[in-house]
Amino acid sequence: MKQIVAFDFDGTLTTKDTLIEFIRYACGTGAFVKGFLRYAHLLVLMKLGLYPNWKAKQKVFAHFFEGMKIEEFDGLCQRFAKDNQHLLRPKGIEAIQQALDKGAEVLIVSASIDNWVYAFFNTEGRFFCDIADITKEPSLCVVGTQIEIKDGLLTGRFLTKNCYGQEKVNRILALYPNRSEYHLTAYGDSRGDKELLAFADESRYKPFR
Image 1 (cartoon, one colour):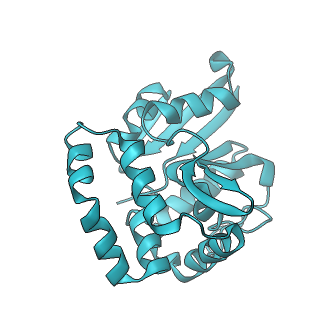
Image 2: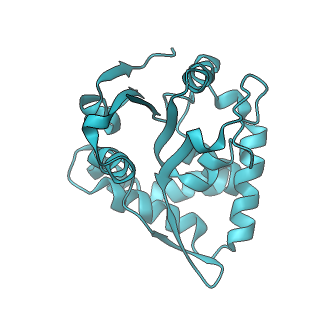
Image 3: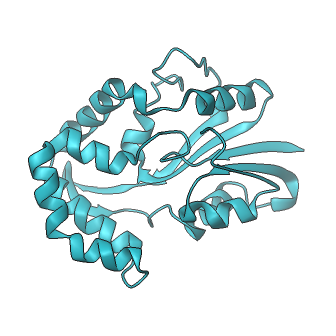
């Protein structure tokens, strides 16, 4: 039976939320604080379940990056990944390598924008850090929130649904619709992973801490 191993990214493979860290890195601490204060009321409502998670996240993302050239954005993603290897949990990276060594297909399933999640991998499918030697590119796939680009510029909107909660399950089913044909192991750390962990045959909660 096919073996699929799905890892959440933020908090599971990393020690911090990379959306926050990326905005701070790209825009500076001052702009970061001002931007989040502007949308603090929406973020509070989101935490209380009174405002959609995706909508709050999209508004914050648009505030900082709407109108930016995609080349500039991708460059920021690459630099962010190279300069922030310390955010990765070594035990998590080892688990990815072990899964690949056993022939499993590995998914990094993240609510973060897939541009900077991809940036922690080079074009050959390897992590930038030295701990892993991921050489089977088809066996590792990033499934994240995708952003809309028009005329080479970020619109500030999401092209896909925010890859959070049930959407993580939906995205896996879109890739692997025949559920009886594979064994799924999932790793997560937050309520955004609840549905994914329940959907899996085996689940690991906060495994690398």
